[in-house]
Length: 640
Image (cartoon, one colour):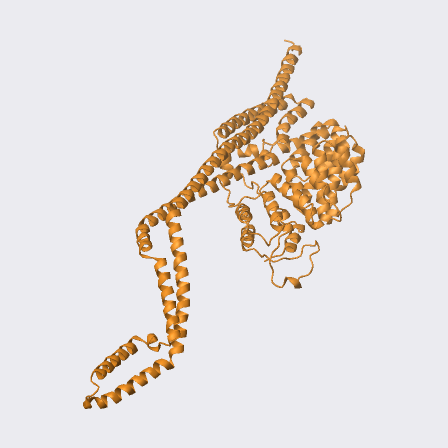
């Protein structure tokens, strides 16, 4: 089983960020832990000394965090974690974070991390708490958590913390604060690239374009070895190009827009901007090349939609009104068709099919906060919503809806289990009704007081036998029968003392009686000890009988009450589950309505943008026709 240190090292390598505080303080058992090297973060391996906690860790390592939380809370409620200490609370806080329950996790961290937890534990806990709050859009809480990180911090954690703080400031419009933070920070080279990008964007947003140019230019020239850095390069060049366009510096903007890959995610915006850079310099013919290239791409892209107006605009500037009119007409037809497709998609979403389609391919069995939608369904609305579906707001909302569905299924399973408990209680009551007559008969036939009296009498008889040395009293049944026969023979001989024929019998009688008595006397002490041992065993049996009689009478009296209480508890749990299912159904409906509204709003915004473009295209086409008509009227007549 891995140690907490192994889990932390996985975090540093960029592992799944769910482990949060649960990996920060897991007291995981490991054989020969005393020979393990000290953990650099101060987290020494510990043994799992409470069996229920091991059960919790089993579900944790199966990524079933909901089941782990359920068992951990149950173990705490039943006081089964006496030897675990604060580790269980840290694990619980991390599990709450894994499900996005940042409020509950914050309470636990506030209570525990202010104590004697290692600095590395506190720093990582607050970092992940801040990250969760940031993703949930609780920016002030996220900044507060990140600022609680103190002391010596791992460079990677410090880099991510700084970038998160900068992003929080930028989202709040505090660009001067972000600039001050990023200017003063120096970290690993791979993280400095992200810091430079944010710094350059912040400088642009406060109007310091000249200061931003060298910084974004540096990011746009990095030696990228991964798709992530290639995308960052494109983004930096695109941002700088558009900033220069807004600054009326089109020639410089072209230099940076040319760096953007033609097959990258930002290629359409780069082509559009490059064309406008040419147009701003009066090179309308050269602007047509990138704009016509955009015509071959998906009309859903905003840059492609704008190019449908830019191309006829360039032709108009080149006085090619015929070609301009043709492209405007084609744009109007395309915009009109797309608007109708969007209407159909909105109707599908209003019919309530969006979320079912999005989650139809979900194969994940467990709830985790880092789950994200990875594949879009093959549905008409998907092609219009890919930007919305990739947004943080929609992903978080979809994640919440998915968690609600998971909890509802979980409650349904529990509700089904209630029937099993009802059957158990009914079976218990039936067995009780069947066994009551037998128990009553047994109780009626068992007189413990009489048995105790017999025991006292037996012990008194033993004392009397010992005092009188009555060896015959401890004889076996066979020996006793022999002794009684000898007694009858002795009585007969005593009744005929003068008969000479009995002389030989008298000698045999005395011999046999002497031998018999000698045998009984020789084993008397052993037999007496065995009888007293039997008395002691009898005492134990009588006490056990008395105890069982008491328990039987108590069960006879309490079982109807106990089964009634169990039935009441089961009924209360069933009612509670029904109430929770009702609440979840209501929240799910509202969440579904919220996500559908987000999707419809996004589609209507696209439709409005297309409508605006269509109006512009119609207006421009009308202007071309007007110029053509007026030009024809003013043209001189040919001589006849």
